[in-house]
Amino acid sequence: VLVDVALVALGDLRAAYRRFVATSPQSRPVVTPLLAHLQRHETDLRQARSRLTPGVSVESPQPRPSGVLGRGVASVLRAERQASRTCLTGARTAAHPEVARLLAQTAASHAQHAALLTRAVM
Amino acid sequence: VTDAEALDQVLRLEHATIWLLAVVGARLDDARRDLVRDAVDAHRTARDRLVAAVAAAGGDPTSSEIAYRLPATRNLAAAVRLQAATVRAYDALIAAASTADLRGLAAELLVSAAEHLALFRWAADAHLATATSAYPGR
Image (cartoon, rainbow over all chains, first blue to last red; front, side, top):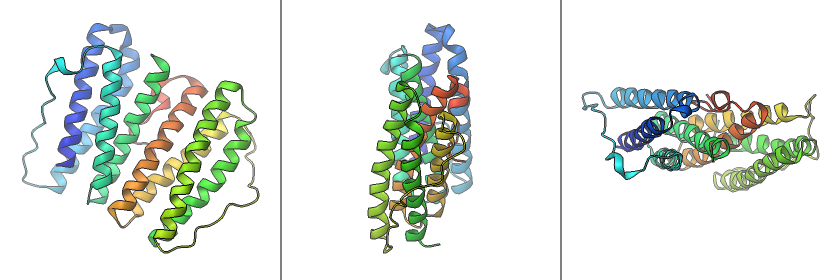
């Protein structure tokens, strides 16, 4: 469940980036490496879930409707911070050390993104 | 390795990092010194939490040394190396801790340390791709 919740937050983040790049194509060079990290987190979290709970469906959680978060860089920042908070909450409560570590690293990575986007763009 | 020993090992690193970052930061320009000062404040908070955690785990928290061996170069790259060492230490602590509570503490401190590491790297070369990593500490 913790991994699913994290994946929803990451899905929201992906949607926020997609909208941001659509409205600000010049941001693509900045966004691309951050999206690559996001992709790795999603992949590794799904793999961890599959390995730790074999036989359980691994359908991707759906991000919330796109109107929720807005389109600007502020919406990306909000989604980065939310993703970091959600993953950190999961890391604090995860019973499995491997999941805790994966969620903590994901939280740390998105905290880095948020800190740098604040400096670089705002 | 017991939880108290694992925590105390990171505590010793925090003592050294606080001292060394303060020395390195003093040689930087104003903007970069402010970045390092913010990080040192975060390390002091981390140190205090670790002291409490070591004691709660039944250990005897190590005190700070009077001084530490200075790095050969005292610039932002040195600060990056010091900060990266703490990120690795918290990642290792998550793996070593025996309880969810301690993993949670290590996770919180990992996030904070990684955030400052990214800001140091950004100040050093201003490239987002090299300032962040998918798995800080790994």
